[in-house]
Length: 138
Image 1 (tube, helix red, strand yellow):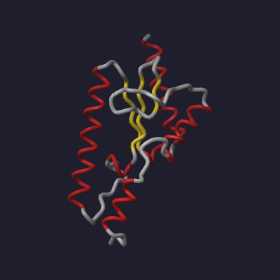
Image 2 (spheres, rainbow, N blue to C red):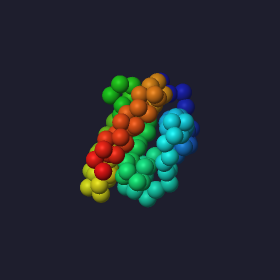
Image 3 (spheres, one colour):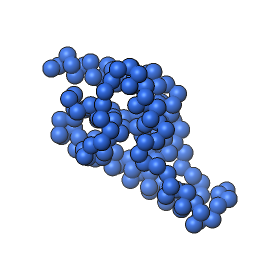
Image 4 (cartoon, rainbow, N blue to C red):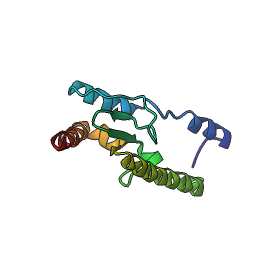
């Protein structure tokens, strides 16, 4: 059971960062160490966390709770209906953003926070493979 009042919980949730999160920084540092150069400021739909403009690749670091990770994203028991609606809306928005970016000619890569935290080398390797495939096509 939640030991915080509704007002305290609301303040806590409002304080959650949506830019420069731990998982974003972890992935960016790992990519930088491998020699990848990227952009983080952009005006693309959905505001991707990492962008490779020359290759038109957009990378999203999706928090497990907020985006509904099938492995570890749990919906709280308290106020369950609200959170289910919120997380479902986030997932639907993610799909729309993917479609918008794809229509603009961008390759979209999404990684769960748990993947970035526990398997950063695999995530970097996957990004490297995706960029390599695009190099071969050009």
